[in-house]
Length: 218
Image (cartoon, rainbow, N blue to C red; front, side, top):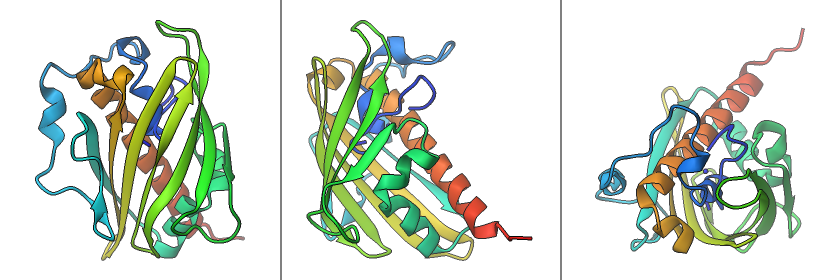
């Protein structure tokens, strides 16, 4: 649930992207404008991403999809994405992250993480996100779901990730949906914030994976 960047949050269940959608126009960076009315429906691909046949919430009004090419081995990208406890080391909006079960990430794995929500029309709070992996194929895809909860806030999210080897490295594709009264009250703004969160997550993943892949000790 899923994203968001240096307004102090990013959001997501899932992605970090999830939570910022609740903040409304007050959370937008200075000078940034919310999407115009009706824009939320414009980024709705004909075919959604899936993992083992399951995708995002087809009825969600708030959704976004994006992808990036990463010049690094698939094993490096996969390790970064699935080592939940280390997320705060390369994603500033994630303040804490912990696995709730041991071993490699797999179907049924759960993890809890937090991200701050700065003051907006409501007082500052911290969102606690509890995500559960519903589908997973090693080095191929992950789909997780779960609630993001803060003072007066409750958002549901579904987040799908696809990882595909390419000539240039790895294409990482992601799609996320949010539901709940806070995000449904202002779909264009919530969608714009989700977009920023997913873009930030992908850019952080790319920078970290490429730095690790191309680092050569002296």
